[in-house]
Amino acid sequence: MSIVEEIALRQSIRLGLLVVGILAALIYAVAFCHRPPSVWKTVVKTIPMPAFAVAVAVSFGSWAVVVALLLSALGDLALSRDGEKAFLVGLISFAAAHVAYVVYFWDIGAGPLAMPVLLAALVVFALSTERWLSPFTGDLRWPVRAYVVIICAMGATALGLVDRPLAVAGAVAFMASDTLLAIQLFRMKPDAALQRMVSVALWVLYAGGQFLIVAGVGWATPLF
Image 1 (tube, rainbow, N blue to C red):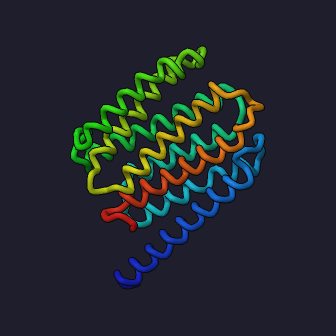
Image 2: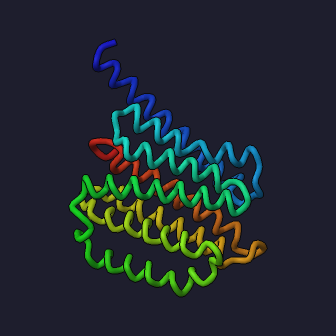
């Protein structure tokens, strides 16, 4: 196989896996995200991130992004089940994924001071969680506080990617999905009328955000 043929093959595999991940994410949003735990819900939910991860790996993309996506897949698996233990596994997995993004964004970016106004907004957001979130988290208060710090650090380092707007948008969407999840878990009643809408919105923000990060910084050049 020539170099040209290998490149074409890898690009075809990348495109196919991205399509598989996007389709699985759409199916989950439409048919599963608002339903109780089930085997099929878990299976469909855990397809997109590994598909994106392999797409990055096969294209010689960043291993930090691959690791972040695989950790996110573990978090998806955990959060597809009920119970505090599953929630903690998911929390730790996603926190580790955010740390991987922090390290990578800092390495390739200009630093968090590239957008000082938005950085200040992140600080305000983090501090505000002490009023609208922490008092409602019970025994999970400190793990949730630590998670807030980590996701804000991810957002801050993403602001340094001034020439990678897709990745910045993806990081913001990822943070927004985490915020909606916190509201859903700790501030909304299980039978609230908005539960289904919030479930769909947070999944679209999460999966879409991850895709934008992959498209923006998964490879040496943005996908679009």
